[in-house]
Image 1 (cartoon, rainbow, N blue to C red):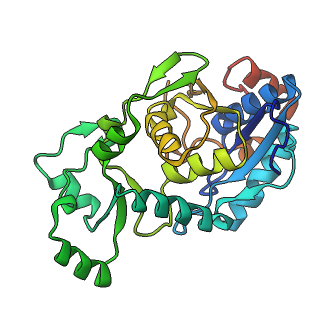
Image 2 (cartoon, rainbow, N blue to C red):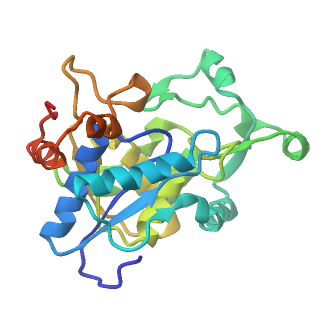
Length: 285
């Protein structure tokens, strides 16, 4: 489950079970798998299922079915983030003890309506409404209202100083998490945000090389900050281009992109499909 060989290459594929996998997911999985196998390393499967409102058990089974159909085999047991909640609480506790977190009671609508909120890489930057709440009022609201936990980004950056992270395509990248504002690290309806959970889990699984789509390049600025704050290692990142459909649109669950299950039902040959993906091409069958 966890690599004990310091020199081993360890990659992972970490989908969310909120729908069936499509060719874009397969493209990323193949690249992570092939990188590990080419270097005699390990390829791990992690199910990112901490969103209780969208994760489904049938999609977990579908992920494993799809990977096996593609001929991809992972090493050890597939890890589920829902079994790792204690680790995320511990990380939040460490950040809170360092004075870097504060509770936030705002809704997305509140933030979107804030006229002063500029836009960052992930949308409107949080205007800091709850950051300046009276401490007494904050305690009262925490007792009766659901709340998220945000990081005080300026304090966090001041604590770490300048940071960099290695990317196989972009070289050494200077981290600039301030652009994101005070991001959420634990949601009202989930024990950890994507940013916190993925950072903690990559370190715990000793992932040396993170292979993922270019749409997550910007998120790495936040992940590098969290690594520094929590004393975690920094892997080498490989951000690949995204597959697009015939209309030039990126593949996505929310757009109803054809799933691997659909391709399988139509009689697609998985060997041919994987060969196309290795060429960076959208499968034609």
